[in-house]
Image (cartoon, rainbow, N blue to C red; front, side, top):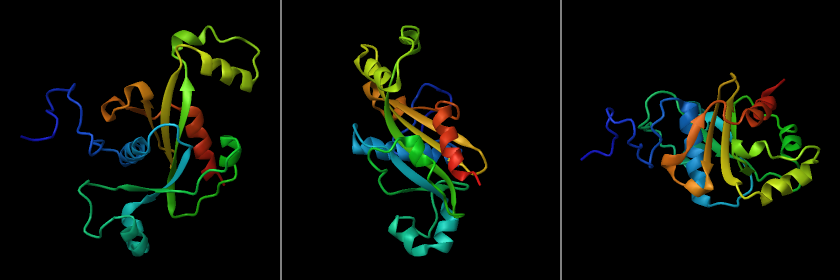
Length: 197
């Protein structure tokens, strides 16, 4: 019996072991989401460089071997992206300020960030008090009974392509990950700015 989903049954989830996405950027985002999931919750933000896998194998074979990218190819057809985790983000530095300090070398074709946040459902947005500063608003959200913990993984490429994956802590399963290019537009914009000249 095959692990592959029945193409006639759109409700059957894809196997958790490998992302079934056709788009290399979506595959990379799902791979990072799965990696972050394996680390558990309550983790710091993590930044990744995205490199072209074939180019990495050709130009940096020792690094490719270290990353487990065998020279024999991949079972995924077409171009692939390899996420390479960067050094830990500096504690106490606001994320937007930190992203403003990044300059990527030419070999990096994109980048991704995974970060945990508290979110409110749309039904609760109308009850947000007006005039709160950022600190008081964060505390208000943290105490709200409808708050939801989410892990957001957002990736961008130099050419402007974007992809995101959002996982709720209460539905922590690979089959419950929501993907789409416009799920976290502000963070995608901030990541895109790291490639600005």
